[in-house]
Length: 57
Image (tube, rainbow, N blue to C red; front, side):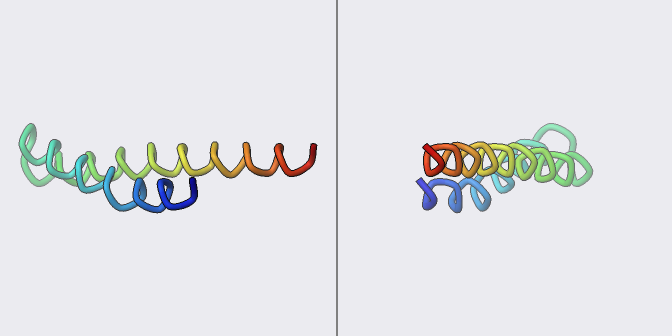
């Protein structure tokens, strides 16, 4: 599970930058990368929260 989260932090911003660049040029690439990073951090945070809850029980 942690490996998937680490990959998400790298891959989702790249995908967002590519898609944003195709749609709106350089500004879209920046926004797409930021959105991808936000989604990746949300996924990682959810995974960490689930692991912490599982360890408590």
